[in-house]
Amino acid sequence: MSMAKSDYKKITTNSVQEMKRNGEKISMLTAYDYTMAKIVDAAGIDVILVGDSASNVMAGHETTLPITLDQMIYHASSVVRAIDRALVVVDLPFGSYQGNSKEALTSAIRIMKESGGHAVKLEGGTEIVDSIERILKAGIPVMGHLGLTPQSIYKFGTYTVRAKEEAEAEKLLEDAKALEAAGCFALVLEKIPSKLAKKVAESLDIPVIGIGAGQDVDGQVLVLHDMLGMTHEFHPRFLRRYLDLYDQITGAVGNYVADVKNRDFPNDKESY
Ligand code: KIV
Image (cartoon, rainbow, N blue to C red):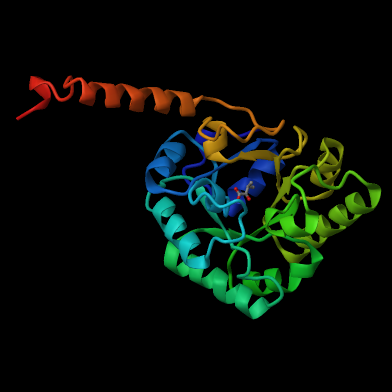
């Protein structure tokens, strides 16, 4: 029998695995600050990702590469203070884990200790298994991330769909199995063909959460500011906009500016 989201008082890594076993889809969104995280948690999201997309969305960088471990800890601790129910997963930023498993462990421990997050996410396959195993040995849950991995954007050259060719698709499936064998509790697949994502989800026992990976995975993730329509210039095919907050906020701010200029705000009732 499938469980409704309300049946879980608090989401844990075990609950998301149980959701896969029960055929309940997992909902995941990013958040980077207290106020948004509070709204998203109250609305019933299962997993909040403090993504390194904060580098783009919050700081205006072109890529996710510049964000630092200290900045990720600041965002994650703000989110953790807001939540009652959701599982909070925090991205390890570029340069804090690649190529050195001791440094990966130190970074993951800092995230858990200083932000209070519940798990970390790392981008990559077999090449980072050493780091993942070391982090897991410290009792820290790890979510994997394959397909389009934005921290490697300068290796890929573009943000186009990954693993369309057979060799890359085979390597991705191999990587996914290696991440599960290493002990990851879940896996994000970004921007890959739906058919391949389905094959990966069917091949693994751990939940596979897609972004631009089609319907046949165990859950979906989007960047909050994109799905709320706050980022006008970004419109990939996989993005469904649930609001057009850019226009609504522009309108509200425009009205406020006009009210101030016209001496309409504040009125007597709004004054002491
Ligand atoms: O940083 C992020 O927002 C992510 C999602 C796109 C999965 O990694």
